[in-house]
Length: 456
Image 1 (cartoon, one colour):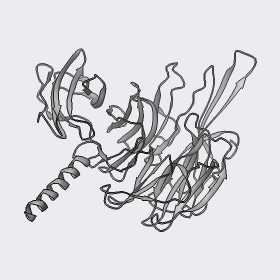
Image 2 (tube, rainbow, N blue to C red):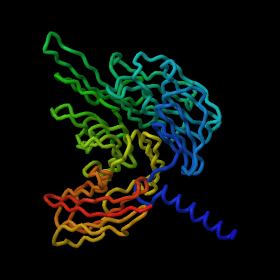
Image 3 (cartoon, helix red, strand yellow):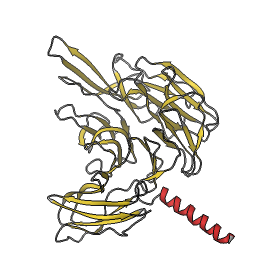
Image 4 (cartoon, rainbow, N blue to C red):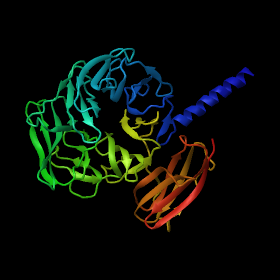
């Protein structure tokens, strides 16, 4: 009898583990909190921390299987967190009681936290947003002060692992808003900024100026890489502007298209050290975070053009995108290595991937089929994953979308241009309730829908 109980417990543990950490795509991790997670960061596969907008800090030492709540000592609206050594971590945000911007630091792995920066910032809607530390040195890093709806703010810099912070040299742009810094090394980085002022009398015109510069001596001198000035009747707000560089030549920035009258967000790719950027259309209306796994492997989080929380992935510098939908707002994405990544979402949700967030269809046969086909998923019924196979006879932008019985979009499994062939993708229903779901293939003028059953 004892042996049977032990076997049952072990099998039950493995079942729960498999449900939490599926082998394909993103899987929900149980935290026990209902709060909105604003950031998550891991130092190793096992050791990580996450913060919420309501002042919680949680920590895991077993890869997310269990979480312990830490006591920061101050009630904060946290914007970001970074672990920079086994014992040293930095959490930044705005104190809820008095609206002071604060940076907290622990040197004992979260047992206690000290306030290492405290300052009142005039714009009470601003908060710390992006924290960046160079991988080759734990002592050098930046954190931005930004608004979610305008990008106004500036940057603080540390050279001693977060113990002390100083304002970044804003050179001649004293009244400008620093949007973000693209970090290359402790002395080489890019500064992106903009300024807006109005013309009178009516009709009011706004003059927008965008500038990005490069320093090779830690801000002592700056070299203008690009400058633009134009008039517009509607202000282009830079929502969560971010600059991410893979090396000194190759990098990406997020911004709104300032030429087209259509309101959409694009990313800019530079391969010449920021002297120019080519626009890449993305399947997003707004971007909340960007992460580069390589020069060509890009992850974006935010809101899709269909107003759905999504993660978009490209493996070819933005030429094609795979998109998956999430049930709650997606705030930030972080990868520890090319395969292991984490997503911080609202309503107590953290997601983990151990296969690089694979959401793009796998080509299982390059033989050209004679027609479009959508096959029955296997297994069916399933728990919690099932494979969906389909065939396209021509080069086409294909989508595979999952719907619930109410016709609401649950997840986009495939959203990319495919060459003729037969493909397979995996649907993970571990975050969903049991019930009937539908999957739909769309390619050119072709569409077909089939039914599947999730049983837990």
